[in-house]
Amino acid sequence: MVLRPGFCDLGFARLDMDRLKRRGFSEAIYCPGKTRGGLKKITAGLIKNKQDILLTKLERDTFAYLKKTFPKLKYNPQAKIGYFKQSAKAREKGLVLVISAGTSDIPIAEEAAVTLEVMGNRVERLYDVGVAGVHRIMHHIELLKKAAVIVVVAGMEGALASLVSGLTSCPVVAVPTSCGYGANFAGLSALLTMLNSCSAGIAVVNIDNGFGAGYFASLVNKS
Image: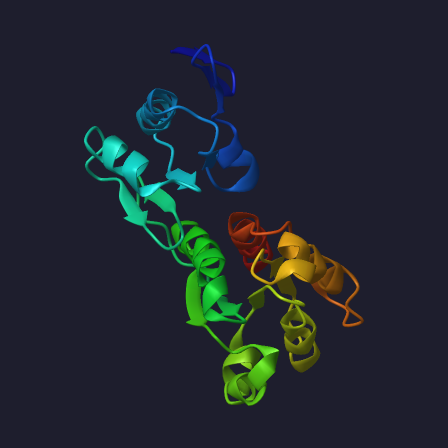
């Protein structure tokens, strides 16, 4: 491990230690494609340099492996996120509401919600309120109005983001999921619907990218 200006050189990886100052949160680690040994060295490097830990798309068995070395590491199995905060963060004043269209969308919604919580946001969840039964979300209009920013997670045709944006005045971060039958094209139909929304004020992230949505919503909430 070699410390250089702004980053830590592990040989196979260069950890961005300056990101905390630039963006307000430490570098997050995307786990697929990395070996267990590599993840262990990366996590150790971050902890040694007093960085918060956020491991995305982390499988349960790999978490169990890392937990042996890092006993304070926590895990959300639905979100597939491992996390550890070096110090308590003051919570942002604004409320971030995370909404899922269906129960099959909850894992991605949880990825967004856990990311937001680790980054110091006040989060509420509203799950299974998709457009197939629109009266379910209409029952929570007052909660929607309290939010500073809303994350909407939806598969199938992805129409929920437009509906929510049309009911509120705050920014909406839309997350298409790969949930759906054949013509859903693994989330492409939901992505295109969200990109083509006629309701202004919607930002769209990539398919199944709950982390990206949570990160962006946190930046909005801090602005």
